[in-house]
Amino acid sequence: MNRDLTNAIRYVMDEWIPPVIRDSRWFMYPFFWIAYRGRNISEVMDFKSRVYSFTPEDYDRFYNNLNTISRNRITDINKPSLEFILDKIDPSATSLIDVGSGNGYLLRTIRQRHPNLQLTAFDIKDKDDSPEYNYVKGNIEQMPFPDKSFDIVTCSHTVEHLIKLELCMKELVRIARKQIFIVTPCQRYYYYTLDEHVNFFPFKEKLTSSIPLKNHECHKLNGDWAYLGKID
Image (cartoon, rainbow, N blue to C red):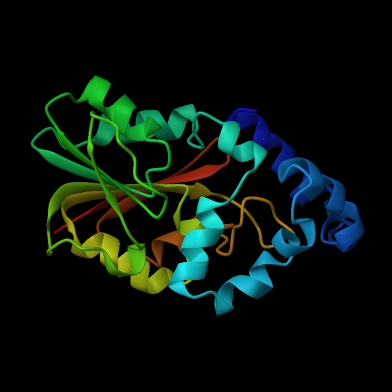
């Protein structure tokens, strides 16, 4: 199921269905059962209540053991957001890190358009052995890189999952020299949402105010926010 279709389904559910129904456990249970393949439904439905007590080890274990239909998607990023990144990459840049790199789709696509960039993937999941980029496993809250390590930082469909959002945003800015790209859903808050989201950005100022950069642009592209921040 591609990103545009899932965004359309989410829009109908979140905007057209009365909240008293949309955010009820009985209504959402079948969607969770399908999305999580019938496994640990009560656990994932109460993810928002449980995740704040997770240790770093719990967080690591939870995401590495996930088995959902969303993992079957080639990518979470929609085409307009992808083109936004590819077109806006600073031509003088020589290095780029994708934070929350997942299966590496974004990095492989960037490689095709910008073959001279030195690429790094960073994620909490277990090791990625792709020969197309260097892989580092870790937690965004404390990334093992010196200040201004990379010309460009990309972070697609990741910030909606972060417990310590302010801290993580500062980390993204800290390791960047030139540009930061962030893509995240334009989504209103409900307790029962799929894909383990804990942060919600129904309007762009909610996103832009969380990133400590004055020089930026942010656009709504097919249901997702595409943000570019420039380091002064």
